[in-house]
Image (cartoon, rainbow, N blue to C red; front, side, top):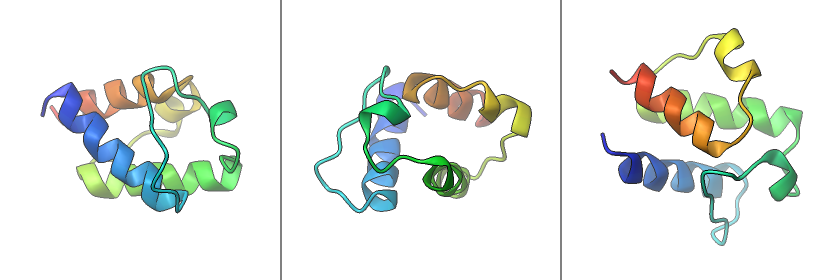
Length: 80
């Protein structure tokens, strides 16, 4: 799966989880950029990403995520 394909799916997931069709994400998007992104929504978001990409993340891997670009990297690595 290419990086643009990963971002396309991630965008759909973000829009679904946050119930906002106007959300756009980039490599540098963080929780601070999306008002509703709190700790509970973060867990929901990660679960949705795992389901969509049929991957499982370790707690250690997700604890260090700084932005959506790093999440995309994690998806790409897990999908190998």
